[in-house]
Image (cartoon, rainbow, N blue to C red; front, side):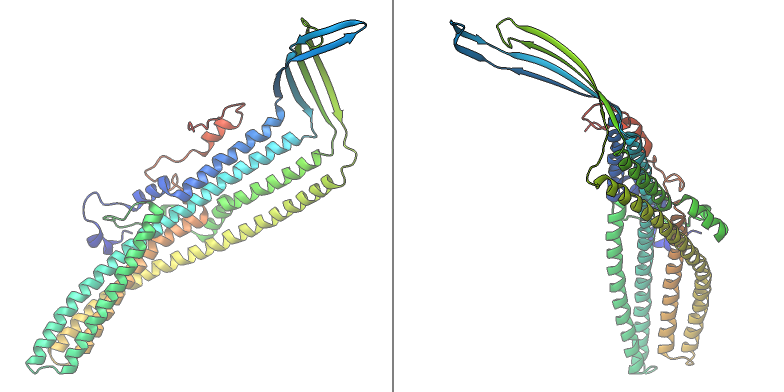
Length: 448
């Protein structure tokens, strides 16, 4: 349902900003969302760090010096100078480390998957905040316009009241009541304008630009399930917070296995190639190579590793409990959002009926006042009730849109892809594919 109440005051041209366009801006430029994406890219590198354990380490060394010998040996006088120098290459390869590298890689991959869900959760929140900021500006813009129109009506009411007072048809009390109500309306307008300025600042913070000619917003009903039980099933199966918590459990269990691996035997091999010249006598030239296999069996390390294993198991248990807490929180959030949406639908219908009834009542009170059957205060009260009803309708229409987005957010489905925003969705896996098995290189995939 479009917010028709907002259309006249907000749409200034065919190029008015839409709710979907503003969400797209927030998706592209929101700093919190971009920072979370950068955090995911940094987490991707954990897999490359873990997989380094599968690969050899290679080191090269070189040295050069001067050696002077003076003296006698066996009755012969010695006097020589040599320049010992050499080159060496060492290669070390881990053959077995108690599956530590395997489990560390699994831990890193779980962290990456969890961080992807955290990014989706942030996207979920940012898009909801953007929708709320957009609708808040629309609501407050409409409220300001309603208050301005009310002031115009009250000014005309005061003019007529003053004229009739001068003609002796009304009393000074009637004129004072009109003046007081006009002053109150001006105060309300100032408060409404202040709130609009505040909401404009929030709009700029979340979406990245100042609001200009906003088009009416529409509910996201096509992503809202028809029944609460379906909504609960979707949310508990798909919500990114739940999935991130489950990946945290996997990562914690893998970390416990990493510590256990430190108690297992370790095997490795190393190869060395060296070339030395002028080590003893001028002209010496030696090439040496060697290959060594090594097995290390831990016997006792002061109990540190045992404590780390026990600690990691407790942390995995904590992660499982926290996952259940997240599941309960998501369930409660879906129920609350669903109730808000249902209430907002009823409030829109009731507010529309209230506005229509108050319009009829105001027209009748004015006619009765002209016939002398109503006082000026009756007319002013009827005018205020109509203003309140119209503002209430604006608020209800805003809530109808925002709470539909709230249900989709509670399901974890408020994403650029599902909401069909006019943007290219961020490919979280593209960076991972570029770095997961990268053996070398200092530059990031984007060239930094």
